[in-house]
Image (cartoon, protein in one colour):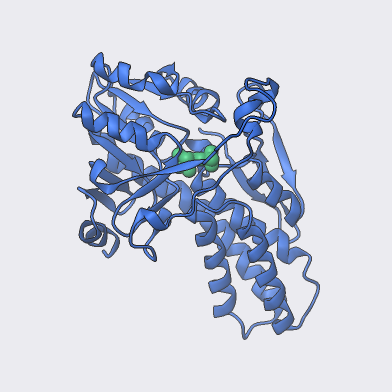
Length: 349
Ligand code: MRU
């Protein structure tokens, strides 16, 4: 069984338990977030990361926030709840699952506004647990829907980490690989190391090795060569936000991989839950791209690799245009040749 990435523990006065992903693969350590600030920090510093896991951090973060609202007055409660969701929403901008989780909690609270505050809190607790549990079945369904795209003998390239660590426990892009393996397929995975924070090297290879899947680590700048050698038959990645027309934001470098795949005639798949779609935006141009600190590039993992004071640009995500995506694999079905119309056909079901 995969390890649980992030979970609520206990009743409404409980806490969040999560794997500190910044320590992997050297150390598997669970940490506990007891208050709002600590979960905000865990999201910001990537102790918990990956779009669906950030969605779970959002809903459980709301529980931590409302734990400290000590009022019986509904109006005052809703004011405080808004402060909590605004604060959590300031942690990371790109993965829409964060905002999806926060809105879901706000909506459920509002639908129950005629109830006493303590009842609303209990309802929110149930809702957060539902989000956790739903994620597990959604990821398995993504695996089911996508496994057919991996054929015996294939080489599969992936970028960043869209595995169990990025979700409650099973992943999106990696779910497809886990399921293909369960179905008896024999294939190899090439994992891009994913500069600058090495989610591919530290997390994806670790997960795949634990699952007994043949994985080879490559540096990001090797992907073109590996494709040219004929070692890659498909690319499968996750996503942080998908616009209504199918443009998909994912870890920086994904766009480049999509161009390489196109050049080599290799199908490029995105695996993501419906909660990763942002139908309020018409194209990927509207996706906010997080910029992170220059130290991640100049002194990654404590070793300085560039001169002091050098200018750095460190966007954490890029957008792959829908035209470079062969299909988007969701729990509701596969969106072939993504476009506004084809996204609607599956999501509107
Ligand atoms: O900065 P991160 O590590 O949160 O970025 C994660 C990714 O880009 C993942 O590929 C994406 O969230 C999909 S997770 C199923």
